[in-house]
View 1: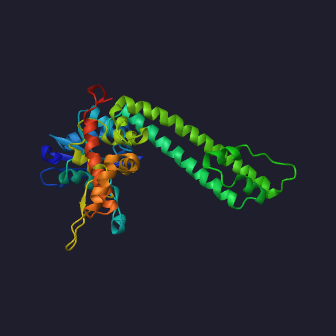
View 2: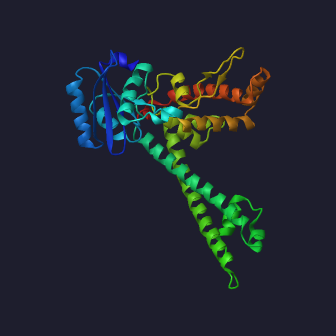
View 3: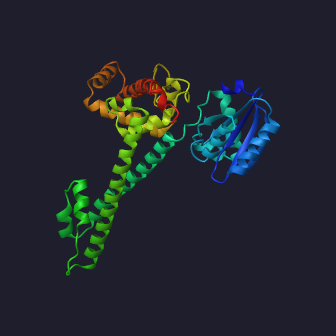
Length: 350
């Protein structure tokens, strides 16, 4: 554990305007002090000064949201030579959702280093560029999806003549036809309103589709620079490869392929009861990374002979289809992690 190599651990619960800090003794886990400071350069300097004053010796900083609200603090601490690690935000369900405060979250982040080794923060520069592109493309795809659903919903109550002209068209053709709609002089109020709504909705779909394609090309360019071998793997497209690179980030961030599988939510979790011995899917971890693995599995199940044979063999052994897919995702996590670790040295810290 990282706490074994440090004298003090500083847990940080990060937010947009202020960060909460909890200083804990690594040997005993006892709370030394809590404080709260603004999320700005002056606050970062004050936090580091307090840590040096109260915790002389070896320090470990455990940050929640090191790739989001805590990105600025993480960069500042790393530049100052501090040891920084990333803490996964907890999933709060049931009664746990009611037991929450910033100071408690900071304390939990500090003590998380006692339970298991933590990953280092994700690398910046090209990796951060990839994260920005993936996040923006995801929003564009969502806008396109919502727009297409809205088009079909508008057609349900559209005037009969308009509905007959547009019903049954594929999605792409439907957007093109709706974008080209024109009003006639004899059109009633309902038809005028429906045509206007369909036309504007189709324009929004076209714009979002153009954004997604532009971002997709830039994502593919970055992936080919950072981890070109991924795109040679069956079922791995530029978007899935982008999320794989983003989760892995750089050499040394994750201690092993098992840690990568845990981060991807593909590590097996015991779920045995009575005479039944089984494992279940992990609902935690990085869900976008997990979705990338799932997308690759779905693609391979359609046209990859080795994957098809593996699933059939697992099912013949008595596993359900879901359990067979879970086993396959665990294998994929191991294989793709080793592939990422073999990336050229020139791309390791860009």
